Amino acid sequence: MNDPSPRKLVHGMPVYASRRFDRPRIFGIAILSDFGSAVRGDEKRNNDAQPNVYRSSEAMPETEWSYLADIWNVGAMIWDLFEGKHMFYGYDPYKKNYTTSAHLAEVIGMLGPPPLDMLKRGERSPEFFTEDGPWKHEIEIPIPQQASLEASEEYLEGRNTDMFMAFIRGMIQ
Image 1 (cartoon, rainbow, N blue to C red):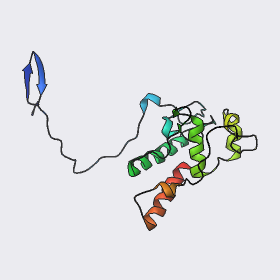
Image 2 (image 1 turned 90 degrees about the horizontal axis):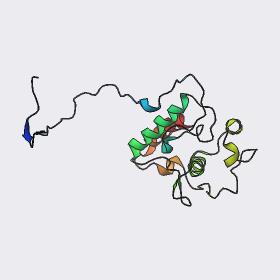
Image 3 (image 1 turned 90 degrees about the vertical axis):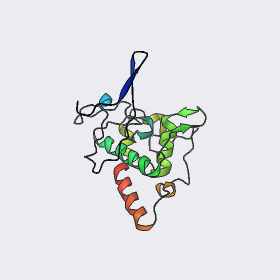
Image 4 (image 1 turned 60 degrees about the vertical axis):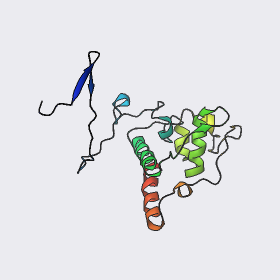
């Protein structure tokens, strides 16, 4: 080793001195990965996938999805990184934790209802939607009425807001 970490032995165990890591002058290519959940992208799936707060609108009603659902995840993560908060939480105030119905209600409030053809393909769609598409009234979670991406965005103004919203909407619609 050319430059080993300074250390000392305490009770027979090495204790290493801290080193300062400076910010790199240049960054390499960003790589998003989750190898613990990796699957082939060319095969359609309908299993419950993705971390709860990033779950795409296709995955929640268990509609067949493929790698395109990952674009939703990237859009939601970009929102998190830029805004410092999740786009959707899926918090159910009655059950005091995440539920798919609470998450879907937030998505509908923010983006509008999912397309009927998508709902017809979802195995769990009948739990949340009527046969012709509206949200079931017997679900305790109401659709947020005053929600919008634009109202949730806190840091941009003018044209920058419009460009960011178009970028994010292109990923999550």
